[in-house]
Amino acid sequence: MSSRFITTPIYYVNDRPHMGHAYASVHADVMARYLRAAGHEVFLLTGADEHGEKIARAAAQAGETPEAFVARHASEFEQAWHTLAVVPDYFVRTTAPAHKAVVQRTLQRLYDAGEIYLAEYRGLYSIGQERFVTDKELVDGKLPEDRDPPIERTEVNYFFRMERHRAWIRDLLLAQPEMIQPPQYRNEILQLLNEPIGDLSISRPASRLSWGISIPWDHEHVTYVWFDALLSYLSPLGYGQDEDENEDEAQVDHDPHGAPRHTSQTSAPSRRQSAFERFWPSATHVIGKDILRTHTLFWLSMGHAMGIAPYRRLHVSGHLLGADGRKMSKSLGNGVDPLEAARQYGADVLRYALVREVSFGFDGIISNTIIEQRLTRDLADDLGNLTSRTLAMIRKYREGIVPSARTDEVAERAIIERTEAMPAQVLALVEDMRLAQATELVMELVRHLNRYVASSAPWELAKSAAGDARLDTVLYTVVEALRAISDLLAPVMPAKMAELRGLLGLDGAPRWAQPWGEGVQAGARICEGTLFPKPQASPTQV
Ligand code: ME8
Image (cartoon, rainbow, N blue to C red; front, side, top):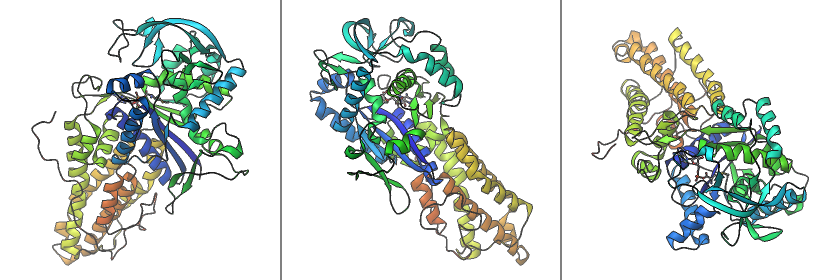
């Protein structure tokens, strides 16, 4: 068993979670569930990015203190993940004392090592993206992703010597082509690295912005929100703490089913491997393309200066677009609310639609119509129908009792072979975050089984005793394949696949790569039910 560390972006909690957030979190959660199913020890991290100008402004607008404002929104995010069946092992908040301590210790170390200096800076600042921007990035006077143009700012800031690390980052990306996926994003960054990237302003004057982590040696400045937020990938692992003081370190232990559970406990000063040592080498960040630069230029140079190994993998998503084909955004009003969609269609259906519809790394549209098409075609017509017709035939022809396979023909052998090969194929795709392809592979098996039922024609076999053995075989083959499908899709649709197992007369947790014949047993009693009710037509759909 190996340890795996997976992170979502640490979201700004200036508003409620939207579909873009759900897209990233569901992908990270699905990957975590697959790896856990395959026997890895997984630590899934998410959290709330709570400092900075954007948050301070939103709190002021809401007439709340920043503390109360972020606490309210952070808990909305936690609740949203619960609703969407995203189960993190730890929810980090950048206002937590343990995180602040990591940020301040890191700053002090880098300052002492000569990686940070004070200078005056004049430039254009985007509040939307919380960073200084260059003229080259502007389209019609503003960043394409921003509503407002950047503002001119001159101030004294502390700077991190980012440019120093440029050649090293370039060499790293050249030497490890698989580190940033899909490859177009690596190419984009390699292109940027051909020219100077400059040093990074990492502080703001406290006189202008007090909502941040104080610079430890100069309380007239607070830490730049990105320098603070990126370190929240490390603080939950107890990074930088001495062995005998790692009180707030997130420990991952296991419940009786082998799933890691987060507990915050005081660890005895021992020689055991720290969470940082255990998990950091496998770090896999899941982000959107809007924060690619911060996760490469900023984060890799910070890590290099700090003397830690670079993360193992950066999975970069494209943007979700609204039904109008434009980037989903609140101001355009072209988004689908994830909690509303989960209420309407069920969390599992939304998870499936997100994962199957928009290939990770590419832009793609999510709308109510698209979610409903996935529900109707893939889930209700293909998987739901296969299940209900098979169970109905077992009731009708075999009194609800699973028969045993009694004949051995090419058609069944092909299904068994294909089903047994699938866990390894699915996992290989999951490792590359190609979840749309992984689910499609399983859905192709579902369609194949529908064709198998049609061509085997159990209703004809049932007409005479001569067809008995063959009928038993067909029925057993489909239910055992459905059992395998429930295991293969459980990470995407945990509740629905548990329901499917129940219909097949199985209890207990799914088992990854269970050999053919060890799942559903002859003699078991099946149940009946509708796995995926079709959506009711509604006049408001877009
Ligand atoms: O950037 N389509 O937080 P954030 C797809 N706090 N994904 C989208 C999306 C869309 N239309 N809109 C947002 C921050 N996302 C920082 C991160 S990490 C140390 C700090 C997703 O709340 C996408 O994953 O703005 C994007 O990277 C993330 O939300 C940004 O979330």
